[in-house]
Image 1: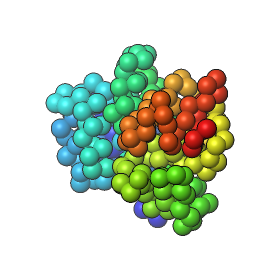
Image 2: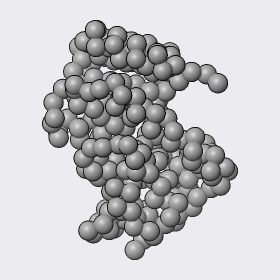
Image 3: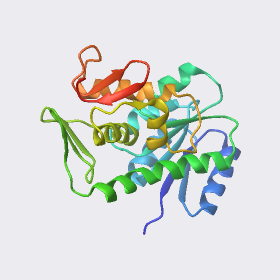
Length: 230
C-alpha cells in the first residue's frame, strides 16, 4: 500500500520541519512548502492526501491556496491559524478546509486529526459497497464518492461528502451537532460545534438547497439537522 502523502505549508521553516519530521516518523511521505504559490505548484504534481496549511503565508495566503486546491484536488485540508479567531475559522471552512488547529498545537493532536480524517472514506466505502443512496432528487454513490443533485454533478470536499453521507444513511432522522461531529470528525475531535453549521451551509449552496424551503438538508430546531422533507 502506498504511503499517505502530506504537504506541510508554513513560512516558519523550523516549525514546518518539526511537523514534517514527526509525520515522517509515523510513516507518511512528506513534502514542504514555505509560500502560497509554491504550495499550489507542489500540490498539483505531488497529489497529497492531506495538506497542513498555515493561513498567514507570503505570495498567496492560506485562504487563497485552499481555494486554488479545491479547483483540482479533494485532499483533506487542515488550516493552521495563530489566532483564536472565530472569523478565521469560519472563513477557512467556507473556503473548503476540513478542519483547523490553533497555534501552538501539539503534534499528537495534529496526528489524531489526520488519522481521524484518513479513516473516513475507507470505513464508509467498505461498509456500503456499490449501493446508491437516493433521497428525492439526490443520488449518492459511496464507492466512487459521487453526488448528483437533480442530475447535476456536485463537487464536494471530503468533509462535506461525509456529512451528506451520514445524514442520507438515516433519512428523516434528526442528528445533533455532536452526533455529526462524532460520525464525521471522530470521537477524539474537540472544538466548537459551529464547525458543523459552516459545512452544512457550504453543502446547501452546492446542492442549491434553500434552507427556508429545504429539499435535502433540513434544520431541526433545537436539535440539529436531518435529511429529506419534514
